[in-house]
Image 1 (tube, rainbow, N blue to C red):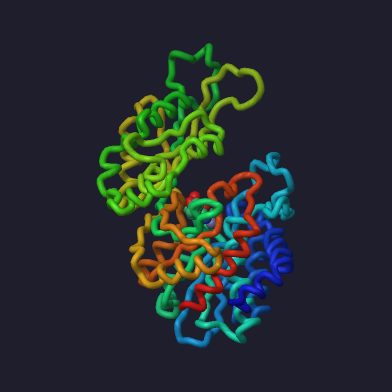
Image 2 (tube, rainbow, N blue to C red):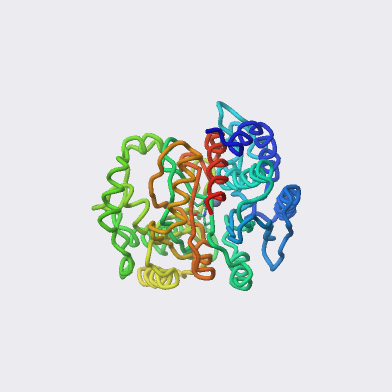
Length: 451
Ligand code: BES
Ligand code: ZN
């Protein structure tokens, strides 16, 4: 049976891609002040685009980056809230891009550029799904409410504040999010768990300024070495986090999950090869998927201090800094874990240095029951759009506002992602398969029809 909506999506593919490229050309890097105007321009571009599709759309400014809100009524009284983010990560390391990050380029059926997969390309599947329904069926099957934020990548809380304030007028039958991944290029997936996150930095301060390591070495603590010792006291060589009580609230995997992870036949060797590491590593006693999806971690995102230039320079640095994040899983409470981690770092830090700890954002993990009707509908929609069966997965990443949707709106959340971990989100040469873009658009349209 030919499906007019799917045929429209096929026929208009080239134009959809050109429009997505326009969206990707706007460098909406939320973390960097120099891009504040671009970020706002990008939000306005989205508003204009959705107005062009007949939506009532506008920006909401409540501090932080603007929120795009756009709504259009449908044939039924049901309402689907579609969330995404229009901001992107900084372009660095800029020298490693084969083509410039904000000049989207297609090579071999793959679209390269910042935001291709995270999240502009995925958001755009929903824009084009609604367009296709409107153009072929004369209306939407249900009301669609888009809420797009501009600070997902930089830890902002504007959308969480807005959702909490406006929860009564945001009531929906489901929240749909495409900001996660498929299991692999041939296996679409529904994500039923995301990890949470806490972020901190630890700064170890020693001498008032960098000093001669011959004159003073041996007489005073070296902040870089102290920092290394602190970090080494946080995770064992076997990958266990050594912070007391860190694992107390972790919900163990259920039997069905362990079995379903095993059935996915994850290939450790292929991952090691993809990442170009000699061997994988992680908490002992757990499979790779269990470690990536269902176990918490302590990670160092960056470490610096002292001399970074050519050859050698004999100093004891005045300070050393580590940027730290912990990924959390249900039912770890970000505030509690943050306190535990800070307390542990303080307790292992010697009194020969001064320690400063700064806290950044935090967000809780989420875990959904896969047996809800919306998730079943999404499974069917993806089966139609991709002509393939879906699997249930968890993802290791975090989408902070999802827990706010759960708490404030109390409706089911469907995480229907079309990207791949190997798409290079946050890194150089980020990309998105145009085949996934097309199939994802079809799945998004089918889901609205089934609501
Ligand atoms: N799209 C990602 C989250 C993601 C990554 C989901 C991989 C599933 C698989 C999202 O845009 C993201 O990167 N979030 C940040 C949040 C952080 C800045 C608070 C993350 O996970 O690091
Ligand atoms: Zn994202």
